[in-house]
Length: 320
Image (cartoon, rainbow, N blue to C red; front, side, top):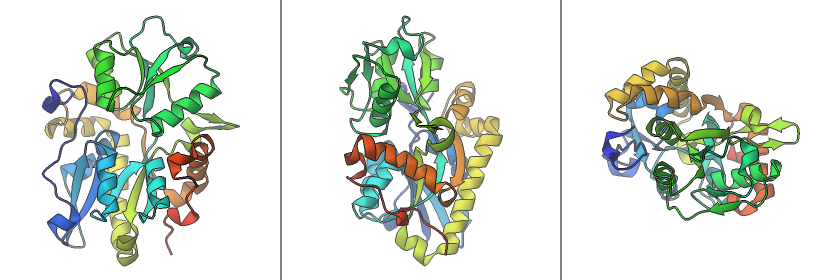
């Protein structure tokens, strides 16, 4: 999908020339996001960066969330998009960024090139490749496999990145894996053997995370920025919400933007990817119960993923 990665499979939304808030000065508002679905959700801002109260909005895109996490620890950015679990872990460690909204929901899929695997029931006695032991995909799949009563699974963490997992599926050094969009759509377009077996959803009691609680990705704000600039924070949220809405309502326009900005060389693949990204901007206070239900799954199954406790209620930023 991405010309810059001719020898690999991932779309790297590499706006590496953008600088951080400290580096670029006080006249910029910097939003740091990981490549993938988050970039697709922010495409309107990338296409036409807004100016808010005289300050230009800059999008800083990083290949991995850990790079954004490091910048947050140093308070170098105003806003960030991160996996919700990683955001809660940081908050519990005293990195004071607050949760504003959920812009991207479930984007993880069980994918295979194995012709003998047709549905979830065929996953018994298989090796499943996942990047990041203890990370979102790992914990959710282990919870998923338990709820589906899958037997004799071996989880392989040997690949060093999501991109490596996707490439391994393409060259058949891996047969079944957990992959996130937009890598899934790229795999499907490159190799007809590769199929989606299931969206990675978790049933918890009577609740289905796919529909109600799969608050996978969070929009965050530096607490000091929010306290000092509440109106500016609301305006930034409005821009991001509008971008997410455009992606949902006009996917063909966003796919064209991706092509025009050289983030894809295949509009059709981009069109396939957009609905699988589950982009839907919802304010965090509106779904506080769902967010904590999602986090409680991680706390119950692997407390260390959250830093040993659920974040307190101040983790979600409420307007005064």
